[in-house]
Length: 380
Image (tube, rainbow, N blue to C red; front, top):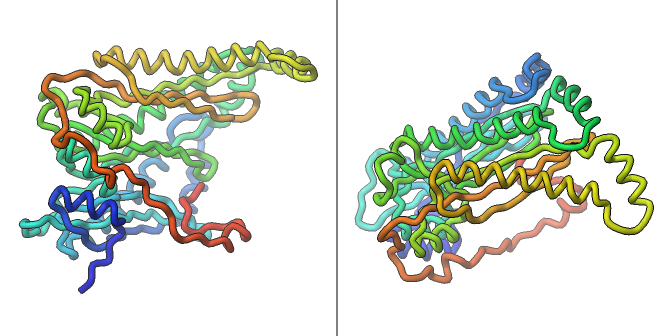
C-alpha cells in the first residue's frame, strides 16, 4: 500500500541522508467541552492573578491524550519514530479539540518493535540538524501554564499605574508563569531520561479570558554533556539550524533564558506625553521608559546566564505586548551557550536541503473573503 506522508521532498532527502524512510501521517485527537473553562474561569482563583492550575491540568491532560493516540497510530504503521509532531488547540462550536499530528518514519535495516523509538517536534530538516549535532531524540516534550492577570491584580495595577515605571506585581506574575512553562518542559525531559531539550518553540495564546503559554521541543540525549545535565537538562530555543552552527564552532547551548518587565507610563507621564504629541519632536518620557523596560528585561536574562556559567547569550529576541490601561509587557528570550572542548558536528556543512524552506502551494482566497479559517489554531 502506498505511503501517505506529511513529509516534504526536502525533509525526505534529509532523513534519507540519516538512514530513514518516510512513513504514514499519524493523527491523534481528544475533544473536550468548553463548559469546564467557563466555570473555572469565573472562580475565585482568577481574582488573585497568576496560574489557574485547574485549567493548566485539563489542557495538559488533553494534549497528552491526543499525543498518546497519535503514537498508537504510528505503532500500527510500524514506524520507528515520529517527526514534525505538533500539539494544537482547535475550536469547534463551543468545544475544544486537542490535536496532535506527525509523520512516522522507518529506518533502513531496522525491524520495528512494538514501541516507537522516539518522537520529536522537529521536522525532517530540523531532525537532520539535531542528529548531525550528535543529539539522539527521545520524545516530544512540552510544558504549559494557563494564567490570568486577575481582577485583583488589575485593581492593584490600576493604583500602581498612577506612578510611572515598573509595575512590580505584574512583572512577578509574568516572570513566574513564563518560567513555569520552562520548568515543566525540563521536568518532562528529565523524566524521559534526556539531558537536553532542543528546538524549543514558545507560543502564547488567549484562552477564555486567560492565556496559555506553551513550550514544545525535543527531549534528547547528547553524549558530550556532563552527568550533571541528566538531573538538569539543557534547554535551547535556537532554531535547529542555528544550533548546528554554534556547535560547529564549539559552543553548546546550556539554558533558555527569559526575562519579563511590565511597565506603566502612568497618568502623569501619559498626560505629559499627550501634550507633547501635539507638536513635532521626540517624546523623551516615553523614549526613556521603553529603553529602561527593555534594559531591565535583558538584565534579567543576563543574571540567569551568569548563574549557569555561560560564556554568551545568543539569539536574543525582544517582544512588546500591550496589556491595556497604558501597561506594557517587555519580554526578552535567548539561549545561554558555553564553549566545550572537542565539540563539533558530524558533517563539515549542512546540505542545502536542510536549509531550504518549503513554500505553500495551496491558497483558499474564499476564506480570506469570509474572514474564517478552520485550519488555524484556536485563539480560545
